[in-house]
Image (cartoon, rainbow, N blue to C red):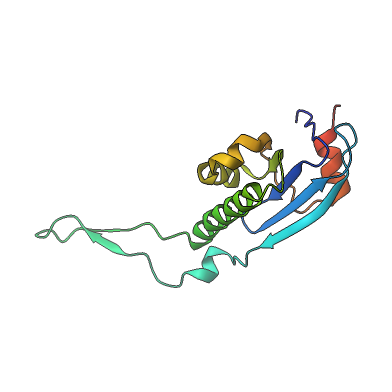
Length: 151
């Protein structure tokens, strides 16, 4: 991973499909010091616990007896996508309130893609770096080290 230079007072979002941690960099670009500012969470059980119905069936034609199964809805993925939109909305509210000028986003590829689609122009203009990694389970020291690596 290429080094990320996080300026002083930048907002750093470390998120996934169920948790978002907003950090503020109180250090400098060479030595980040991330302080937790806000945490969002979403209770999103696995898809097997969310959908109990069998997938639907479709008919090829009215006169035909052939049927085919429909793809089962992935409720877990739908909830992750909704949560990503919630994160984007929270970032918009913070940007609109003038709470940050620079933004770094760290999220898994699927979540990052959903965030990109949902970012308001005010958020996109403040975005200085994206990292497609899952770091929500790491402690803050490890996140700082990974983001500042190779400086």
